[in-house]
Image 1 (spheres, helix red, strand yellow):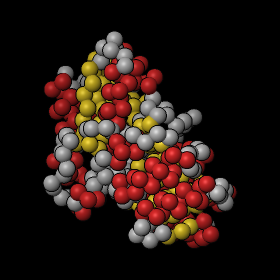
Image 2: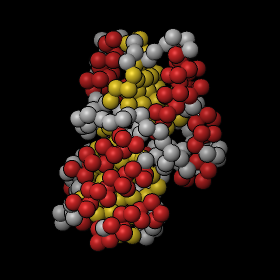
Image 3: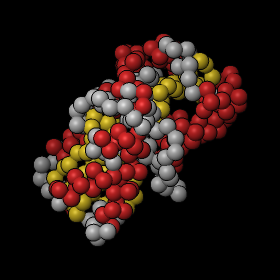
Length: 305
């Protein structure tokens, strides 16, 4: 996803000189195409993410469209106060980009595991929250946020994510995207965890179970219409996210359903069960350890059935 993000941003920045990128002293191999193509639109703020965010807010208030870039929790939790006070409060045109949402940097321990970021950023007024599920969604999110005027959060995987879509027609911030038709069970996912959802669906096919599947590249604002439509015609709605179960994507869906108690669907949230990871390992290993791999998803849904 990160390569797709940078490639898309380079093309946008060549046409729009107001686009700026600020990095927190990393990502040089990935960002190299940007600074080589648009050297006057690139800044290295050093290992000073709070300062990076405040500088971005100042640039935005002077007419720039600024993308801050760092990994895991560094551009989000480390500088949450600056995002809140300097960016969101002023509707500053700053896009906070996190590379490595969830367990991507799992081998570096819990300090690098971004598992509360959606909840934190979603709670801030005036902040859009996006977590694309594949390369095409990442491309479309980047283009949409470059046009959007205001503060936003873009949560990306690291690399190697598979393509879900060949193309997306009429992509919009706040709209979910249907991937598979189905009945009785609806599975919603946000971010790169979709690859586990897709493998789970292949397992279900062996038992002639065909869930209705949507990806939600936007967590805030959430697509209420899709949620309520699925709640009307399905028995179970399952949310999948590589994030803490408190305050994240599943919580956003539950908030919509709580205000419509007449809907029949039962909600099942699959996420990290409100714990810090005490384990260290790669993303696949940690997903399995915390019930987020496709076999765990299949097992949980079959128990609900």
